[in-house]
Image: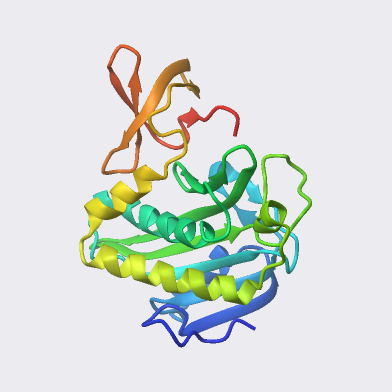
Length: 254
């Protein structure tokens, strides 16, 4: 299962498959620290029992029904102030593959994939290893709802729920890795502006007036951009711009 990929340059040439694990990110981090991983190493876990999400949340996944894996990347060609471009490149790649099956896939800042009106279909968690010279490694954890049909929350959905079809996990995985590698190469080629433009074009609630919850209370604004560090830019009703980290703001309804 999950054989070495033939149609990629470096991603998926070293694949570690685990039937069960707590977190594929934790396994990938351990491989890096033990010097048993290289750029392009992938850890795939069929049953991830303690998958990590943002805000300390766990990722709910049914064994053998979804894709939960982690990539080891070495984006040291980016400045530390450009870390969010990696997030955008990965998000764009997943959305592009998923939109072949489901219409209106959007990216919910900072790193979720959602189908408005149906719920969250995937998420990304990037954990960085920094050295004195800069960015050493990035562990990119990806959790995608593919064939699971029952969730404990109405805020989650899957390709199976949305289409009624069963999907070949290995084929979806292969397509994703090829697209992620292509976007990563674009990142290396400094196509930052194009990647950001694509990310914003498919951003959930882009340019829509909404009420957001913040640490200071509720505010009315519309998403108008992402700053170089990945902070969310809101334009308020009076024209003022405010910027928020992912822990500082909550979206309505999701």
